[in-house]
Length: 431
Image 1 (cartoon, rainbow, N blue to C red):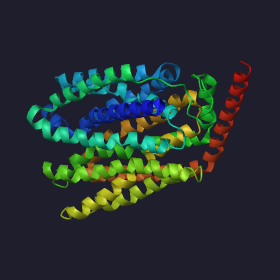
Image 2: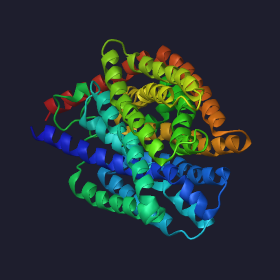
Image 3: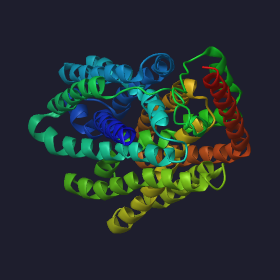
Image 4: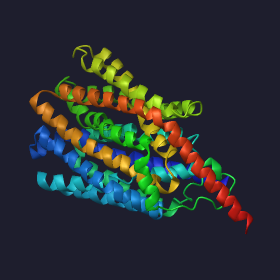
């Protein structure tokens, strides 16, 4: 009973951390117009603001991954939350574009803190339900985007965009205190099925041999590769889509809100749906999560093409197709995280996901700037459509290749965990 209560408490805190952190992180897209107006920025200059934070986050992923696998994870997550609050406050007081560019880039320091959170989650929940749990946690991305969008559109006009940053930064500091005093670490690997009946098992920490083995697994190599391209669509859409609606589809603020709210809620549904479908098919075929991910990206690409080509006056048809597209976009996300952990030893899971996100972040960092450049030369519609559709096709090909190797890599991990469980039983018998 206590274990279930601990899991529930940790899940709630992690959900709140990710929800509010995503709101702060994605708020910049909804505040693009007032920030551009104050500093007199082009789309390319504004794209560089987002790219800077993503680049800083990218280069720090390996460091965060190593620290999480080596040291106490909740204390590091509390530190990340504190950094989030402090750097957001610095962004709020930046007087010029150059200082804002630097301070906003510094917010990327804490953006690379998620591998430790996901690693702890994997030690609280077994492989059979991780897809659902990760899908629930990843609800925070669209819901956080929605929360940030509503805050930006309703508050920035009255209290100013800087005051909005003060609010979200303060929430980061409050959560840092909560995480530090409430969240407890658990032994790495303790939720693996082979370790279920072994008390005090799973005390594993980072070692370089296990880390090097990550780059020998074909499943991970392919997932790392698709990760670079897979984040382009989300970062382009979250950063530029509101401006696309306002400038090119001529929506006013009310139309933007009433178009985006149902779409984002549908998008949010796609995360737990993708996780649940991944768990369902994984129990029947170890390639199940990968098949769900491939279906999501290829269907999303087809639907986005038809959505963006709807005539401007057909707002209802546009909204319906946009909602359908939103349902398929997130199906891959929880299944990528789950698959990384399906083939990775517990003591290097933060590092494995850090590598995944390290590679993804370079794609994410390039996406807003590339879209801004294409937009200045053509249109936001062209930028969104070309970038999203081409990268989703690449991801579909990568997932298809992953399906050839993932069963072997999962069997290898299960064999390694069985050997550890047997060694632990023998050790306990000699005590």
